[in-house]
Length: 569
Image (cartoon, rainbow, N blue to C red; front, side):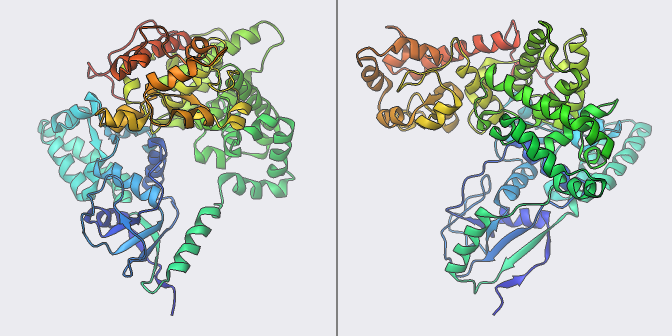
């Protein structure tokens, strides 16, 4: 008997409908949803462009071999009998379900005004945290209509619901304006909305006769294989007849500049950097990379590789991005490499001034979340403005217009990867460097690997739950995290801070205050750590980390981003 029930394409809206109806579920042992919202946006752009986004694999689960759970954000199963278990495609389906059903930690919008003005789809889509006042205010249709902001959750009902929404928007205008807007929005519907509505995923459905051992083997295979043919491989094939071996160039660059290998850089960012550096008007969209000429590679490859290595060195040594896992945005590497390829590093003191500009741009982009939406467009904009800044012009807009509300740190968890990672790097670079709780050595990438140093809770999670702190994001926020070695974390376990801190402090000869201060943690008799006062601790550390953010970004004042309604992305 065949293992396969069918291999038919399925409409995206039908798949998401099955998730919502709880007829399609996940094996309970599948890892949690981990995608960043920026990755979700990229996937939606691919779908709106009708690009392939991979296939899905599921099994008709008659035998109930595995325990099941709902997709994150979907209605709980609560005894509902599902039909299918998804074996491959959890992250893609979860991200799309949350975006189109308006659930999860972020809300996704399409700026129709930008599309009407001729912007690309990827420049018109954006996301915000669902908990912000800005997002809550945009639940109002009146505000959506005024700003021509389409919540993507409207599209869960397909193109028909888009039409209903746009007609309702148009009816708020006088007749002549209404007709013009309806005509313009109809073109957007034809170009983008119907493409999303008609999008199909190739779906392989395994039959209900599939045995448990076969399913386990499939899972094991999926987890260790599956290399996709990417843009780098396509261009490698294209340039091969022209005596340009991209694979050889890449291997040479990694050998010449080991930091590129250390940071596990995707070679696609080198190609993007070449596209940015080689064009009079910088641009690095997929089409720009695919259209690179052999002369672009020959003229810019070496300079971009050197620029990438120089940029990574600045991030590692000065910004304390000591391991690739702590890089806030991979997408910042292309503009950074292009900038340094075009401008180089002079052999004078000006090199130091340029280094300071790079650092300030990095921190402003991280805490301003500049690369959260439309990273390709942001990269192109930044390269042009950074080159001008290096030549004596004004700072780029991402630096000049930065606003930051330190209260936002209370909502930043490991799920908000960019600001979370940036804050951890900021702590690493405080003063003379954060020090290990075990050896009291300054924490480096090598020490992190040797001592098993990772980000952990200061107030243990279980301790806070017992004290009635019910919200996970409150317990997991970056204010309650720092880098702690494996040995110390095991010693901490679920103990109260006053308990485990006393043990560390009473170690003869251990520089307790110096080590805690290096992590931006409070010391002294009034320390909220010693009183086990979590709320006072959050307030203290928020103020302390805000001082560090001001130091690296140049910000003078905190912004109350929740107070106003003018922060549309």
